[in-house]
Length: 113
Image (cartoon, rainbow, N blue to C red; front, side, top):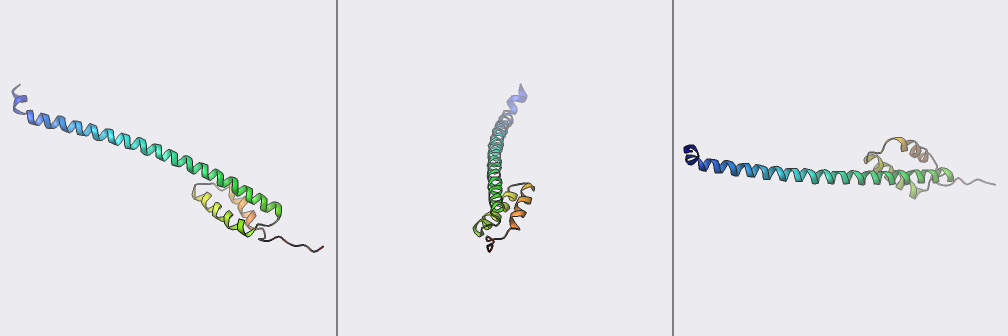
C-alpha cells in the first residue's frame, strides 16, 4: 500500500497515457475505415467509367467500320477515350478494335459511277 501512496502521481500519469493511447488507436481505426470506404468507392467509379468508355469505343469503331471511314470529329474523341480507358486500367482487348478503326480513312471514299 505504501508503494501506491508514494507513487500515486506516476500511476495517474500512466493511466492517463493509456487513455490517450486508446483514444489515438480509435481515431486511427476510424480513419482507416473511412479511407478504405473512400478507396472502394473510387475503385467502383473507375470500373464504371472504364466500362462506359469500352462501350463507347466499341460503338464508334463499329460505326466507322460499317461506314468504311472514321469522321474527323470521332477520331479525336476515340483517341482521347482510348487513352483514358488504358489509364483507368483497361486491358488490351480494345486495342485491336481501336487499331482497325485508326487504319480507316478519315473521309468517305467517293466512287465514280
